[in-house]
Amino acid sequence: MKISQILLAAALVATASFSAQAQHSHQPAAHGNRAAGETHAHQSPHGGVVRTAGAYHLELVQQAGEVHVYLLDANEATMAPTGTTGSVMLLTTAGKTSTVALKQTGDHLVARVPAGITVRTAIISLKAKGKSLSARFEKLDAAAKTGKAVEAAYQCPMQCEGSASDKPGACPKCGMALVKKA
Image (spheres, rainbow, N blue to C red):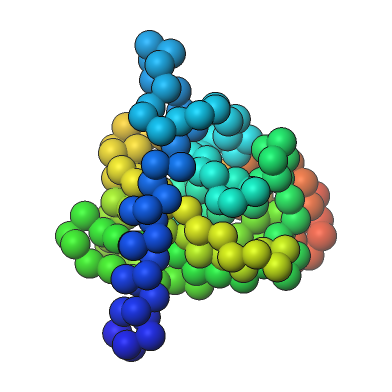
């Protein structure tokens, strides 16, 4: 691991711990009470977990071997990630860390999760709309065990890589209409 990656990891962990009080889970408890530090509830338009990131929101959706990140505006509407760059630091259940680049795919960003690992925590770092954004998503391994991960229901008929989506639309590679999986 390069010294710059170690420094980035340390900075992200420090930033995340200071901002943890400002972030909140967007899946309300069954009894209707809000988690400590939660000031308002949000929808998760793609079935994931939403965290506040500055004036925006980030939604993380786990799918088989991938992490999907959606940039949401103040009204929780999906924003086009045009020009958005970033990475996700994955902390595993085995205590290992890896950083993976996020790649734009249609209306969201995708990172491939290295094979054989179970993600416990993900720290997203983005440069979007001229602003640096970050959010920390914890207890992802518990969500995976309970089956809360959302499977893609639509895919390109040409099986283009990165075309899987949880909603209808067009393939980001070839432009064909996505079809519902059988």
